[in-house]
Image 1 (cartoon, protein in one colour):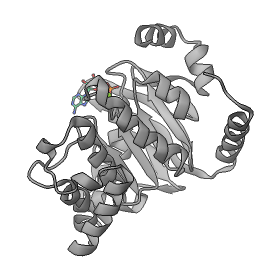
Image 2 (cartoon, rainbow, N blue to C red):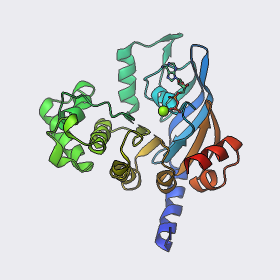
Image 3 (cartoon, protein in one colour):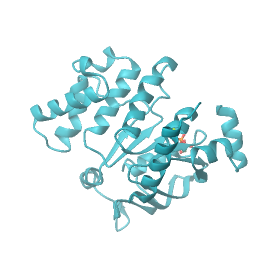
Length: 273
Ligand code: ADP
Ligand code: MG
């Protein structure tokens, strides 16, 4: 792609801004096993405010588990995860915290998550789906929550479909509802787990367009597991390559995608291209 001077200047100033931003999310020494299977074997990662990080890696490398840990959908075996310098406890003297405490911490930390398979409530309309976290988690009154839901649906280009049920929407539209719902809590960090991998190819672009706009126009802090290399190159400030529960390589999209060093990364990138 041809790049003009203004684009180069804005990329440089964006990189500079990200470098100067404070750390939004810190992951240190994170381990996670399911029975005997060690899925995460010591993950360390820092994400700065406004930074967009693409998480790449073969299936089974632990990407979803890492995102679920950050969002308290799993418990840690070892390590720490902190938001804005505040460690969010997963254990209380070795035992898992009660679900209510976990939910409170999730809200306090300000994490939103977009799932691979949308995870919408089938019996609720688009606007009701988006309003759910506002009402249940943030205790916003119903009318106010629905008004905010309508605003968020507008942001993902779905104002006209606010009263549709999930089954009346295309996969791309359902995922845009999923994104609007993840934004409802005004998250500090937005996690996206392969947001386009369940979509028919012709529906991928409309979802990537929304994510791109959140990243580049609105400056959201994001960690995105994805196999869309072109998208990662265009939108990510940094690419992290994981395999078998470890970070093997990370750097700018150019460094990692064009000049990978680790043989596993070289093989993976060749296969995905
Ligand atoms: P990725 O998202 O990179 O494909 P995952 O985090 O989904 O990787 O999975 C990593 C490994 O952890 C896989 O081998 C998977 O089978 C295993 N795994 C994930 N969740 C569970 C679970 N709840 N119970 C047992 N094994 C799991
Ligand atoms: Mg996954």
